[in-house]
Length: 288
Image (cartoon, rainbow, N blue to C red; front, side, top):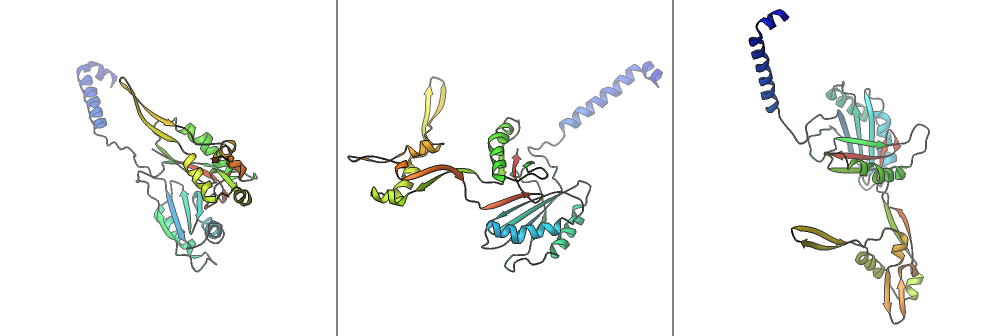
């Protein structure tokens, strides 16, 4: 064969040239997508429990359903979130499973769930589909190791302050979805007696915070052929800065916010739960 290829070198060159040409034509005709497919084999379960708080949804809906769904074979991981009036569970399977068969198995297991509140609706079970441009192509979950205590708030801080800034450097990332834990927020605890003594009302405190704690846009600044966007950064980020806000200034003197209120860094009101394999966690979804 080698001797024949050497002897008929012109024919061999022509054959390989044609193969290379066909390869280039095939490459140019390959379909291109901004967000190509490759959906993860997942099944989502949504249950509505009208009027129930996140803790009630977690205890009465999410955990009982997770208990029966754990018996389904082929599960790779299970994540859930409990919000005001709604429970959401997502099951990721191994790539080798038939999702249609697993869909039937999941529905059968859900029918075995007992002692669910009568007010809760029947669970909506669907094969999760990824073609939506707003869906995450990848999730990174922070959860406790075996035997360790779970602190979802701390995990959220790590996601927001460490993980997301690093992920923003990765080419092709667009937006991020953060779930689990509670965001940090500044809490202002007003002393009603201190307000009354200075003849002030709570509305004046809220107006002060709304008016003062914001960034101001200055518009474009054009210098020659360059244009810059100008803004004034006046948003306070520490309790000390908040307490320096001037609530009133008149002939009697200056009333600062710390004269009538105590300020400290706290957490947002909990309006949902995110669980990973049954434990509180935090996660970030990456959108291209």
